[in-house]
Length: 283
Image (cartoon, rainbow, N blue to C red; front, side):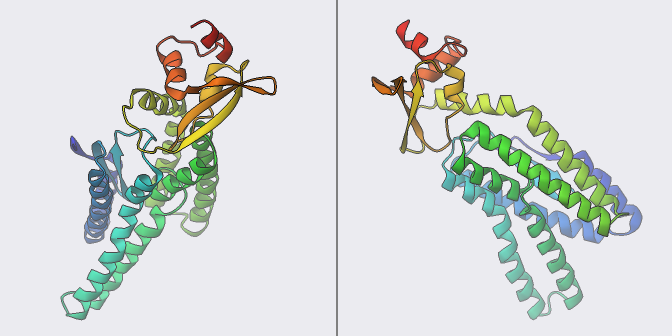
């Protein structure tokens, strides 16, 4: 359930600038495009039964905040992310229809297409927290464990942000809106980086409390008995259920350990700095 719609302070700042500079009509057009874009994300999330907290509207986009923590199937997350950009495709067709039947004049049609594709391509940039940045994280999560994937995607995203900022300052050096966008994206990276330990723990905690896995695929992980519990958990990936095989030297030991047992030791018994051997020999 959506608790509320939130208007970001930057939205009101750009709104005021548009009023002063006489670009109010452009602002309303962009807002409508952003609204439909976010409704696409929200509708897809509702379809899959996600818990939606709020939708935050920004002057150049929006963020649909969900109470999910990286454990949804890749297919669901991909569809929810792409549901926003896909709205711009049907809107292009609808705009052409309105222009063809003289409901819109050609000048407004051209203006609509400009803003429509500008928002579409901007949101597909591989920069967090844009849709492209979320796709970048999903791609990293396919290759790396969750904790590492989150950090790697942020590092790659930051490099793209630096390149984006350099291009903008070269070609649009006096655009206040561009400066506001870059400032917001930089702050979003800093906040996500600071919250990384919390995001990782929420990922593990949701796995611990989950009664049913969205993905039944199993991943077997071989670890040495001398490995610390917290280091084993760092190898956990999204989209799979983990089975841990203990090794003493080069020889595997039985039985195979379920991921729930390790998570229970981590959260309930607080044995993060105990070795796997100590955890299970003491039980």
